Length: 486
Image 1: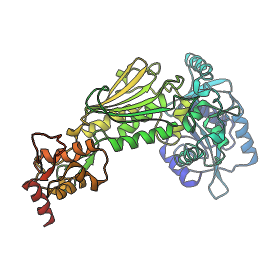
Image 2: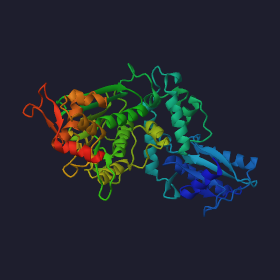
Image 3: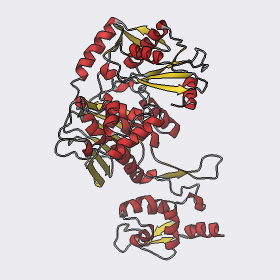
Image 4: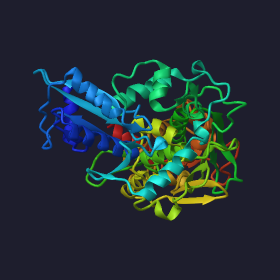
């Protein structure tokens, strides 16, 4: 950590600050705060920063470092996850930064025989019933599916590029020490993805490259259905096994290719605004949750995205965690992680927070976008998030009534269709210059809106599916192009 990063950390006002000056009492206070951070959401203790945020620093001798090391040795279980950094202020004085990540899977931690917790900006002794509950949870966590050794998986079998990307992004987000080496084993140890030298199943699901036959649950299912039922025609169908980070990227890329891109002119603006039926940030948040919180212990589990004409559904196998119900997701609710190691890796990259605010951000994004909040449900061990919005041909705002006569309301493909249709053309002839291959999509998304707007017409209007059907520009369609060209 450098001085600039330290100043930013102090400015955030969320760290415990201490002027140590070799005080045993203040070292004890540092240990109590670190204990509270380890048992909670994580945090930093800055030794050499005044309570008002002034960076004063102090002389750091070998004796000081031994005292700090001795303090860290008074934790049970050992506080091996606490990382120490030293920022040189350039005047013979330094600031010691003690970074304690959230380590709930190993909680409760005790310091000098007492468990501590953070309440706001203060550290207090943990209540006995909370300590007993965390102790039971810790014993259970040792038997979690994601904690178990992966079957027939070696470090060289994993996606090293993705692992190094996680390391780099986590360092940039200041959620991993800048001193973390590029050694894959070292990265896994710091992320808790290797236990006693063995690669965990969490590591396999996060970075695996081979899933069959041992890990069929690494499945992503993508489907576009005509109409409003899954029994309708399948317009697009993709099923593939991949690791969690790739799953999120592939799902978002597929939705970007599949969902119609509509256009509108915001009031007071002369520029067209392109937008998806559902805001991309809401889709991404829901997909992240589906990937992180599903039940990986079931070999038949998967993440699925189904797109219908009237809705988008994101499904994940695994019921809600204990204490979470569908009806509380739209309000303030706790963050309860089924897979802390998998969620922790995403958190380190800055992809998600750990405060249980994800669904609230989704709802707010939908409100701003002007669509209804998603519906959350759980049935037969499958959690489904449903966005109710038009996705069929009617969702594409081609040239609407108030846009007829203005070329600005047309997409590039629609402009090209009108130009070609100066003489009658078949659908395939209109498609060819665009490079498109899906005839149904082209008819519904490009040609259909032009027909509805009266800019294009059929040569055989009574038989829209006739093999001899051709399309030609109407006088209104020709006028749109001519007026713009002038």
